[in-house]
Length: 403
Ligand code: NAD
Image 1: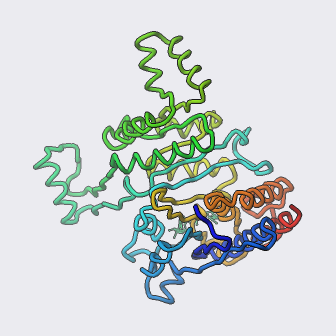
Image 2: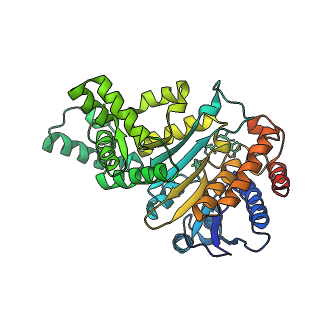
């Protein structure tokens, strides 16, 4: 990206706990930029309205003006947004991702020493998830049980397509799961581009193609097609050589490919993946998966490294360059407004944002201050400490000022 000295970054503080964590995180970002650039560069913050505040001021939870401003901005960073029931959206967050076609949800999962984890050796967890962000059941095509629409779909399925598996036709809700070749391929390419640029050695596709042959199975098939565009040695190559020349020839071919710097590519069924990340998480580096699998996997992995209070994320369209960086958790109504929340999720999303902008030194300064603060056991309550949100941010700023 061509980043000016004073880039404009759009922000939405968010609802509930968003207000607690956003302004704490913003102080940390400004402190790091000031130190790194010796006061020469600075962020021009542009506030946008969405969620509760937008509704109160503008009568709309997701105003067109906000969408236009995100479209115009270099990048956007946001806190969580609450979606009121019956407002025409299933989720404002999902609507934002779909309207801007932010097809890749990128979630790095990394362990910081000093955090207690349910795993014996949590430092083995270090991977980046690429979750497809616009398709799958998140497309929101659902028909409630007993409605005319559900009945129509069920009649079409049984009369036209001769589907006989709907056990209780009068009382079935119906959901549709679109998964496309193009939607899959652009997500998987983003995962491979990341693997190549960060020198990763393994990319794994996670799916349920054993049950959903054409949707999740399609994802697997198209993902392997994308793998052939990159310097890779795949599990399919291994199988082919094994069938023709035996296992030792396949093992040797794999070893030679890895020696030559190729990326190893395989796929794992989602349920097996969820047990593998508990038993042998170190085997995974870059994950590409569908929308719903990615949702489950992200939270399961976050729990292994300290929970959603420290889990960052970004929603990116790598073609247009649009990116929204956000905490992956919700508005946490139980602790909202109490200055108790952990701002680390948003701070680490900011680290991703600075890396994306190419301000890698700023990203490094913030991340190492965070790692050091955690190591010294200055923690918020969710991680077993007693610091408030603002005290935690102050501790980071103190560390940053001594870089
Ligand atoms: P949640 O993530 O808000 O809270 C789950 C639990 O995690 C709560 O106990 C909460 O206190 C805790 N928690 C969350 N963030 C924390 C932090 N930074 N520090 C310490 N503890 C933290 O999930 P929920 O309660 O299911 O959802 C509440 C609302 O958030 C819903 O309206 C939902 O629609 C919305 N939501 C928004 C987003 C988003 O904006 N991306 C994501 C998920 C949910």
